Length: 320
Image (cartoon, rainbow, N blue to C red; front, side, top):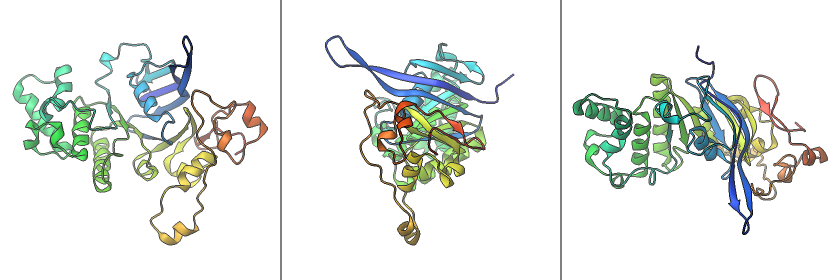
C-alpha cells in the first residue's frame, strides 16, 4: 500500500561541525528539528531569509548531505539510512546556480542524456537522442542547441537545461532550489508556468525553495516559513498569505512589493530590529525572540513548538 504522503520529514537536523579552536569544534545548527510532509503532485513552498537553512533542507532531503538525525520517508518507506541509488530516479534536484551545476566540458545533449545513461533508460542511440530532443522541446530549447556547450547559453537557458536533466528520469519529486532566482522576471514567469504545466502533465511533486514570496504563492499549495533552522509557520498558501500569524511571517509579507501605488502607500512595512543571530550561538528559547516585538520572559526559556491554529495552519509562537 502506498502512503498518503510522498515525502515525510520528521525532526530533521543537520549540524555541521565548525573548527573553533585547536581541538575544539562547535556545531553549526543549519537545520534544527524540521518536520513537514508533501502529498503526490503537491507543491510545498519553503521561504525565509538567506542563511535560514532552506537549501540545506533540500539537499539533506535528497541525502546530498547526510542528516545528523531525524527521519525521511519516501512513499511510506524510510530512506534515512538506505542506499539512495534506487531512489535517485524518483527524487531529483534543480540547483540554484545554473553556472556551476552544469559540466562545461559536456554538450547539452550529453548533460541531459547523462541520467538516461546512468539508469539505462534507452535501448539504442536513436531512442536516446529522441528522448533528449523531446526533453529539450518540453523546456523550450531548440534541437540545434543539442551540440552546444553550457557556456554558450544565457542564465535562463542554462536553468532550462538543468530542469530538462532533472526531468529525464521521470521523477515523482523534485527539489527546486531557488530555481528561478537567477533569471530575468519575464523568463521567471515562463519557467514557473512550465513547472506548473509539467506538474499537470506528469503529476510531479515539488519542494519549491525561494526568496520571492509572490512566486511562492503563485506556484505553491502550501507554504512553510523558516527562521534559523526551524519552521515557524506552515499552512495553506492563501491562508498563510492572507492571515499570517507568526510575527516573522508578518514581517516577511510586509516587505513584498505591491503593484498598486495607492495600496502600497497604505500598507505598513514591519521592519525587524537587530540582526539574525549566528546559528553557532543561538539564543535560548525561541530563536526569533531577539528581534520580536511580542517577546516575553517565557520566549527566552521555552522554545515554542508548532501548534495547529485551525485547518492545518501550524504556528510556533507562545503569544499569537
